[in-house]
Every structure is written in C-alpha cells, then in structure tokens.
Amino acid sequence: MGRESVRTLFMVAAGVLLLQYGIIALLSLGAGEPWPAVIQPGFKNVWDGKDTVRIPRADLEVRMASGRTLPVPLDQLFDGIPASHHLGLLRAQFQPASISGTSSTERALSPETRVWLFERMDRLFPDEQALLMLAVWREMQFDRASQESTTRVIDTLVIDFEEHARRTDR
Amino acid sequence: MRAGRIDNWIHGSFRPSATGLGAYRIFYAAFALLVVAPGHDAYASLAGFVGLPPSMFTPPPGPMQLFSGFPRRFTAESIHLLLNLSLAALLLGYRTRISSIVTGVLFLVLFGFSYSIGKINHNILFVLVPIVMSASGWGSALSLDALRRAVVAERNPETPEPSLEPGAVSWPLMLLGLIVGFAIFTAGFAKILGGWLDPTTHAAYGHVLKNVFVRGRGALLAPVIVGIESGVIWEIFDYLTVFFEVGFLAACAHRRSLRLFAGLAVLFHFGVMMTMNIAFAFNLAVYAAFVDWDRIAGALNRGRTTSPLASVQILGDGREGSPLRADLLGFLAVLSLGAAFYLVGSPLLWLDRIFVLDSDLSAREVLVVTTGAVLVLIFGLRRSTAAVRESVSAARAHLRRLIAP
Image (cartoon, rainbow over the protein chains, first blue to last red):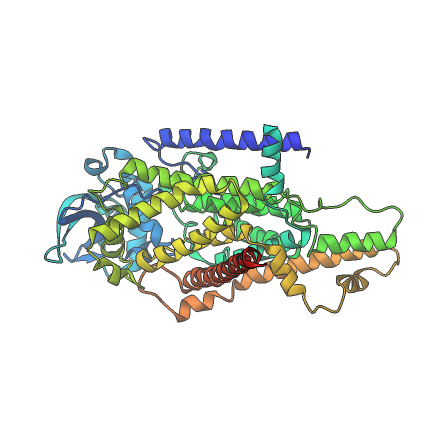
C-alpha cells in the first residue's frame, strides 16, 4: 500500500472513529450502546459526597404454591452466563417501567420468557410449584457516618406463572 | 511538508521487524487460547445462551439485529470450534492474514451474541487487534507461512514464490495505537461530562461502594479501600483517572509516550482490579502490541545454535511435492492444536477451580493482570535506572570537560 493510500486510510479511520462516537452518543439516549463500538466504559456516574450513598439493586424471588417465598440464585438461573452480565440482564428485562421509564425493560413478562422461567423454576426447585416470580428492585442506602446500610423496596415486577401452571395441569 | 510529518509519524513511530511482529502474534494467539479460552470461559462461550428464548434476545444496535435469537447449540459449538482453529492457525502462523481476519470476525460474532442479553463488556480493542494487524505482515516470520516460503525458495531459488505475507509493515501498529488512544479518550471524556472533575463529587469512591455493596465484589483490597474516607485522596484519584484517559490520545503522537501510557494502563488496571475487582484482562493483550517485541525476540534467540532453516529439512528436501507436504503438515498441526483447545480448553482453567475468589474475578484474570503489572514495574524500573545512569554519565562527562585544563 502506497504512502498516500495509508495517509488516506488514517484520515478515514479518524473520521470514522469520530462519526461513530457521535452516533453512539445519539443511540445511547434511547436505543442503547451499539456493538461493535470503539469506546471504553465511561463509569460516568458520580457520588455527590453526601453521607448517604444510594445504590439500586435487584433480586429475584419465587413464590411457591406452598406459600414459601424463596430467593432465586442468579448464577443458577442464568447458568453459564457471566456474573457481570446479571445486573445488565435484570435492568434490560426485569425492570418495571415505573423505574426505567419504558415498558421495553419488562420483557420478562412476555409469554415465551415466562414459560422459560417457569421451566427453570421447575428444574431449580423440583419439590415445589412456582406461582409467581418477583423481580424486587430496592434502593440500598449506605450511611458513611454510622457505616450502616438500609434497604427500601422501590418497585416489583411480578411475573405470573399461574396461567402456565394451570395449562400444564399441575 | 505536513504530509511528510504525518508519514513519519505513521511509518516511522514503530519500526518492528518481521520477527518482532511474529513474536507479538504468537503472544496474542496464546493469550486468547490460554486466558480467554473460547468455548470454555463463561465470558467467551455461548453455552449459557443457547437455551434462552428469542424473547430474551435484546441485541444492541448494530449487525446483531440481523439475528432473531440466540444461536442453537450446533451453531454455538461451530463458532467455538472455528475460533479455536483460527487461533491455532494464528499461533502457528498458517495462512496468517486470513486466520487473523477470521479470528476477529468470529470474536465479533461470539461477543455480539453474548452481549445481546442487556450488558456489553468493552473488549472491542482485543477483537480489533487481529483485524488491524492482518495488514502488518505479522505472519512473515516465526510462522508456518515463512517456513513454507523457505521450502519453496529452497526448491526454486531462481523463481521465488510470491510472498504469502508482506514483510514487516509498521503502519498497522500506529493505526492500532490511534484506535486504542481514541477508545480510552472516550472513557475520560465521558467522565468529564459526568462530573468527575467536580471537586464536590467523588466518582471513584462511589463506584467502589457500588462494586462492594451491590455487586458483591469484595475481594482483594476492596474492603480496605472502602475504609479510606479522605475526600482529598479520592479527588486525586478522580483527577488522575480523567487526565490519564484523556491524555492517551495525545500520547499517540510519539512511540515513547504511547509505550509509557500503555505501561501506566497496565498498572491502572491492576489498581482497579485490586480495589474494584474489575480485571479488564483483555486489554493487556492490546497494550502488549506496543512493547518492544524485537528486543524480546532477540533475547529469546540468544544462544540459539541451530538455524530456523534446519526445520525446513523436515518439510522440504528438494523432492517433488514438498510445498504441498509443508502445507499439509501445517494444516494438520493447526487442526490438532485447534481441536485440542476446543475439546479440552486452557490448562489455566484449572486455576479458577482451585482458587475461588469472593467476587466474580477469576484466578486466571488475577494472575494475568498481576503478572502484567509486575513486568511493567520491572521493565519500567530498568529503563528508569538506565536513563538515570545515562544522565549521570553525561553530567560527569560534561563536568570533566568543564574542569579540564
């Protein structure tokens, strides 16, 4: 490749890098970050320095026909999926619209996903029958002064299995 | 004039030899097979995604939207097998240009599926390395391609076969540097927009707290660092992080600054791993591109008594069909090595089973990042000591000249 061609390639590459960054910025406002994209994670969020740190977290629980409510271990539910993906997965698919602002994060309510979740609960808890799955979104408040943490529930996404359970004559 | 300076920057910043490039190629492929372990490590495997329903397939904007769901088991295993084969080909330098591009594309597809669940890991630089470096001639030495070329040349010295690979070409390395610098710059720029430079906020500390208390990343130094409450210290961390990341793009202006920033990046990732249990091991294979591989290859070659061409005797002795035999043996070697890694995986995976950490860090990642940091410190210390010695000698010589009668 001649020197002029290589120079042109570098200029085109620089232009493409800038253009794709602009596109990423626009897409990130609504559609989300694209792949592939030549960026590195920003970790943009900052803490305001006040004594209380507020951090959102989500847990999955399953309510059984026996009346028990059990925690669902994410590493077993999503066996083979890296642990660092779990929170992103919950945000994208198990988050109530009241928190995310869009119903597109309630994908777990789709019939296909419900069937899959029900079958997974059957495998994880063979001696129980799952009626509901609860994606409980909490805000953890950590007080720096007292070094204590408290949690409060913000909202819960309820995934109902009863219809599926009736259809499978259980 | 300006074009001349740009050309000097592009072609003259790095002047790697074919051997140096070959050494890096081997390092990258070995890293991918041993550390990334496609098909075996959860971060590089589609096994966990195979049974998921299409309703859970949430591809990020981009080419993954061409697919309607996660791959079936056969497709997933085919991707794993092909990736191990292409990495074996890359390691051995067999049809290097093609195997480089195939490796990059397969990684793009594999990670694309993996990131269609709602979370993207930012290892794009690692994926781009083989694609960019395919134009560098990194298969023209320390490779089966080079061996095959030698066989053909030995057979027909008057009519040499057109090279399967160009000789060493330096501009892809500078292009990679530009891409890396830009990518890391975007991280710093996002931080500036997010308020990291605001003295009333403590960004790094907030992320440490989130990692420890929400994500359960409480291993290594994380519990210790949480106890540091000095706002000044955390603000210094915030500023240093931003200036380092933003400065990476400017560091691309010169080979030495790029190497310095690459070394600092390794130490930065080590610090992040120890305090936030986030490893970014993938990036180490990228920063390694800017190491002086000529020196390393030279050091490894020291004391060598046999010529590499001695191995040509195995593949070609002037009889008919020798290049074909060379090709066939090469193909069989790639097939055997690739199949072995596909079936058995990396021997380093055993480390993860023996040393289980109290976070989602793996023992492999800790080993790799720690080793990288130690090597950077050793070489950095050596270079600094040498530089100090040189300065002292120069100062002494100057002083002698001044006081000489």
